[in-house]
Image (tube, rainbow, N blue to C red; front, side, top):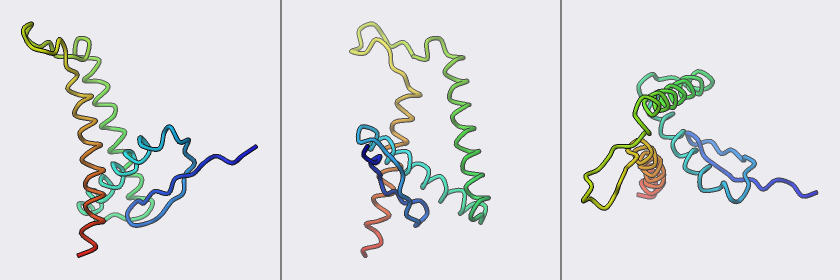
Length: 118
C-alpha cells in the first residue's frame, strides 16, 4: 500500500507537510493561503503568537463560516434574482465573494514571496 501524497504549505513562515490527495491540491493551497492571511491579520492586531494565535484564527474562521451559513439559510434559495433580460437567471453572491476572498488570499501569499526578492 502506498503512502498518501503530501503537500508542503507555509503558515506564518513555518513549513508544514500535510497529507493531500492530488485532486484536492488546489483547494488545500487556497485554504492554506486564506489561513496564512488570517493569521497574519490577527497577529498584527493582537500581537498574539503560537497556540493562542492559532486558536483565535480558528475561532474567527469558524465564526465567518457560521455567519455565512446563517445568511445563506436566511436568504431564499441563497440567490439574488436578476432581471429577466439579463444573461444570468440567478447569482450566488456569497459563493462568489468566498471564491474571490480565496483567490485574493492566494495572490497576497504569492505577492508576499515576491516582495521578499526585492
